[in-house]
Amino acid sequence: MHEVSHPVVFGFGRQMKVTPYGVGAGRRLACGMVGLLVGACAMESVGPNSVREVTIGILSRERPQSVSVQCETLRVFAEGTTETPGTTLEVEADGDSVLFRPSRTARTASLIVTCAEPLTITSPAGGPRRYGRRLEIQARRSALSLRVAVPFEAYVASVADAELGELLSANREPRELRRAMRIVVRSYALAGLHRHADEGYDFCDLTHCMHFPGLMPGAEAGEAGPVLLNPRTEQVLPAYFHSTCGGTLAGPRSAWPEARDNDLYRSGPDGAGNCARSPHYRWRAEIETDDLLGVLPGVRSIQDIQLRRVQGRVSLIEVNDGRRTLRLSGMEFVSRAGRAWGWQRIKSNAFRMRRLSHERYLIEGRGLGHGVGLCQWGAARLAAEGATAEEIVRYYFPGADLVETRSP
Ligand SMILES: [Zn+2]
Ligand SMILES: [Zn+2]
Image (cartoon, rainbow, N blue to C red; front, side, top):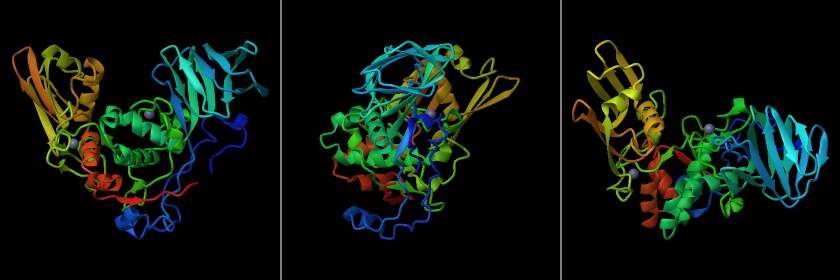
C-alpha cells in the first residue's frame, strides 16, 4: 500500500514510490484465455496486484511560470500550515520559490494542494485540464514543477483514450478497441513504474512515457482489468504499441538491440492489411543532403550509407564520409530527424533511402511508430470486425499470458 495518510508527508516521490510489480505470492491463472473470455476466472484469479495511485509529472514540456488551480474547496499545505483559500489559487514561480495567492501572498519552497474533487489546472499554454485530487508544486529557475497523484485506472483510461484519439471517434463501436488499449496501457504502465524515480514521480505526461492530457471524460469510472504477463519471468510485459505498423510488425529487438523476449510480440504481416486505411500506411520524404548531414553527428559528407535491418526495420545506419564510419541506431535516426524536421517527415523506422542527386535523398517508408506490439489502426479494424479486446491483445502479443489484476 503506498497511500499516504496526510498530505504534508507527501514528499517528492519518496512516500509515493510504489512497490515493485510482479505476481507476488499469487498462483498463475490456471484457466487461461477461455476462462477469461467467459469470466470464469474472476473469483480465483491471482494475478498481479493493481496499483491504486500513480504520480505524474505534468506540463513537463511547457514548464509554466504560473498556473491557476481551481476546485470547490481547496486546501493548501505549506511550511507546516494549512489554508483554505476558496475555489481558486494562483501559483507562480519566482526563482526556486513558489508564490501563491489569493489568501495571502506567500512564499514557500514546496506547496501541496488537495481537493475532494479532481483539481482543474489552467496554464498560460492551455487548459483548464482536470487532474487528480492532490498536487505538489515546486519551482526551479522560475519554472513550476508540478506532480499530481492520479488514481491508476483513471490514468490508464485517460491515456488509452488520448493515445487512440481520432480512432475512437471514427469507430462506431469503440468498446472493445478501448478495452484492448486499456489492457496494453495498463501493462505498459505497470512494467515501467519507476521510469522517473530519480525525479520523484512515476510518469511524465509526454510520449516519452505516454501522452496524458489530464483526466478524459468518464475516466474516473475506470476499473481494474487484465494485464499481459511475460510467462518466463511472470512480470508484467512492457506492452508496446504504436499508431500504424504499415503492414509488418516486428519484435522489440528491431528497435532496441538489447531488448529481450522478442517472441512474445507478433512479428510479420499484420493480417491482410489491417492498418491499410491509416493515413500513415505509406509515406515518402525528400530530404536535402545538407539536412541529412545535420542529423548525422560528426559526418562531413556521405560517401556511403548502409541501412541494416532486423525484421524489416532499420536497426542500424552506417554512414561513411571517407574518414570514419558513423553508426546510428534506426530509432535514434528517427528521433533526431523528428526533432530537426518535425515528427511528420520520417514517421517510422521501416524505410528505404535512395540518393536522387548530389543534393537530395528520397526516403520512402511504412507506418507511424516502431511497429512493435499493438498496431492501433490494425486493432481498430479488428474491433470493427467484431474481435473482443482479449482476442485483439492475444493477436498482437501471442506469447504473453493475459491475467486479471487484483484490486489493492
Ligand atoms: Zn517519461
Ligand atoms: Zn498494422
